[in-house]
Length: 199
Image (cartoon, rainbow, N blue to C red; front, side, top):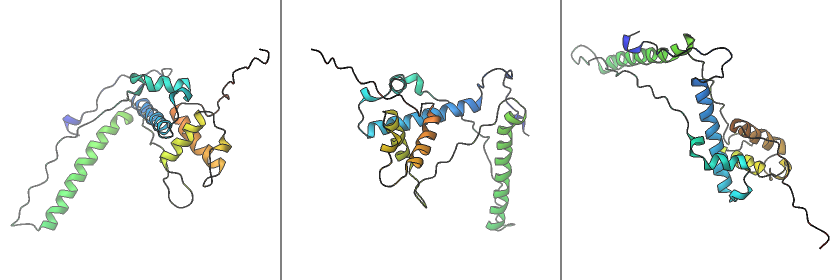
C-alpha cells in the first residue's frame, strides 16, 4: 500500500461507549433523510404545521437537527499507462488501462476498509433498499412518506390505504420509514376539548 494511503488513526472507543464513528454518522444521515421525506410529504399533503406532532415541528424548526455528516475521501490521482501506438493496438492499450484502473480503484477501496479491518471503526451497514413500483403493488418512496405523514397526524392505519394497497402493506412500509426516522408508529389519539354542557 502506498504511504499516501496509510490507514488513518482514529481513537478506539470503549465497549460501553455509544457508537460515535462512521456507522453512527451514516445512521444519523439516514434518520435525517427519512425525517425530511416525511416532512416533504406533510407539506405536499397540505397538512398545516399546527397538526404536526410537537417532535416533528421541533425537528423542522431547528436547523441544527438537520445537520448531517459527510466524509469525502479523495483518492490519489490515477495516471493511465502511456499508449504506445507503434507497439500496441488500441484494444491492447484499453485492456492494460482497464487493468491499471481496477488495481488503483481496488487499492483505494481496501485502504478505506482498513479503518474497519484494523478495528478503528465499525462497518457501515448498507442502507435498506426500498423497492419502487415494479411487479405487484410496490409503492414509490414518496407515497410511503405520505402514509407515514398521515399516520403521524393521527390517522388510523385502516383509513390510509385507499383502493390500491392493503392495510398491512401500508402499515409495514410506513412503520419502517417512521422507525428509521426515530418517530413513533403508535400515537395517542388527539385530545378533544371538553365542552361544558352547563352554560
